[in-house]
Image (cartoon, rainbow over all chains, first blue to last red; front, side, top):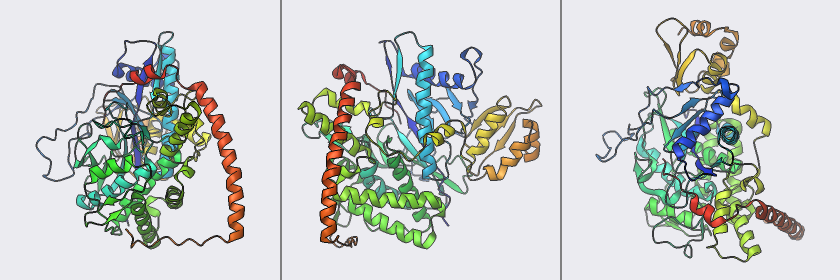
Length: 503
Length: 63
C-alpha cells in the first residue's frame, strides 16, 4: 500500500508597513513574529525566548536527481540568524527571504491541513494585532496571503507530501507535471493583468493564478530563480532510506478552504496512485512550462493543450481522466493512504469542481478563488463602468488577500467554510493528534523550559544533566497521541518523559 | 481528445427542467442582490487612493 500521505503547507506571506516610509521587510517580519511569540508566553514585559529551530538536519541543496544537478544549481541559503520559532501546535513560524513564513505541522490528511492552514491565518491575524501594540502610533503591519506583488516578484505557498523513497523520481515528475499544470483550474487564486514582459493589460486582463507566470523550468532544484514545475529538493526530514518529501512549489496560496482541500487532496491522491502503480496516464503535456502559462491565461478553460503524441486535450478533460483513474485506484486500493474520510470528501469535491467548471464556471464562486475574485471584479467594473486598467481593480485584487478581518475581501466574498471557528482556534495552540507533530507540540507545551531546540525530525532536551539529549522523530506517522499520549500525560518532568521513552 | 468517454449523466425529464429553470431564476436574482450588497461593502472597505496603494505594494521575491 502507498505510504500514508502526510502533508503540510508552508506559506510565505506578503508584508507591508503603513504609516512610515522607513521600514524593511526583514525587520517588520521579525517584529511581527516576535510580537506573537512574546504574546504567547505572557505579557510583553516578561517575554521569554521562544524555542529555537534546530538547523542540524537542514540541507535544502540536496537534489533528488542523483548525479543530475547541473553545475549552476546553487543550493539555497539557510538563513540561520533570523527569527525562527516552534509553536505548540507543532508549526514553525519564521522569517524567510524577507517574508514572514509559517509551516503548518505535519497533517495526516487534506482535511487536517485545511484546519491548520486556517489556524495559520489566525496566527498571522493575532500577530498583526500584537505587533500593533509595539509599533509607534499610526503605524501598522499588514499581511497578505498571496504569491505576487504583481510587479514580477513572487513568493511561495509550498506543499509537502511524504512519499516512498522507492518510487522512481522520473515517475513522480511524469504524474506531478500533468497534475500541476491542469489542477490550476481549481487551485488558482486569480490575478489582474500579467507579469510577463511585453504583455499589456489589454491582452490579459485577468488570469487564473498568481504563480504560473513565475515558472520557467520543468524540473530543477531552484525555488527563487528559474522556478521549476517539479522541484527536486531532496530533504526528507524523515528516515531518508524509506521516505522522500516532495516539495511542491507550483501552487497558489488559497483563501478558499475548499480550494486548499482540493489542491492538497487531489495531489496526495495522485502520489498515492503513483506509489501503488495505479497511475497509468497516457496524456503527457508537450512543453509543460508554456502549457502552465496558457492554462493560467485561459479564462474560458476551453483551449486545448498539445500532448506529446500530437493529440490535444483541455485541462478539464485531463482532470476528468485523472479523476477516473483515481476512482479506479480507490476501488482497488481504498483511500487509507490519503485518510478515508478526507479521501472521500476530496473525491466528491473534485468531481463537483470539474462538473461546475465544465458547465458554468461562475457556479464555483463559493469554492474556487479565481472565480470568486472574478465575480467581484466584474461586478465592480459593471457598477463603476470602469475599464480593466483601473487601479481600483488592482487594489481589489490585492485586498482579496488582506488578512485583516475588517479589510479582507475574500472574507466577504461568500466563500464556503469547511473548518469551524472552534476547530481553527483549537489548532492555533494544539497539534494534530495523528502525526509526530503531536509529540513536538505537547513537549513544547508541557516542558517549555527543557526543550532547547526542535526541528521536523528531532527535539533537543536539556534536563539539567550533561549532555543535551536529542530525541529523534524519523517516522512522521509516529509520536501520535496513540503512541505517546499516555506517556506524555503521566510524565511530571522532562527527565521522566525521556526515561520512559528510553531516550 | 474526442475519444474520451463522456461522463454519463441522465438527462432530466421536461418537468424537472422547468422547475429547475424557475429555481435558477430565483436563485439568480438572489445572487444578484447578494452581489450588490457585497459591492456596497467593497466600496466601503476598499483602500482609498488605490493607485498609491497598488504602487506601494512591492515585495522582495521569495521562494
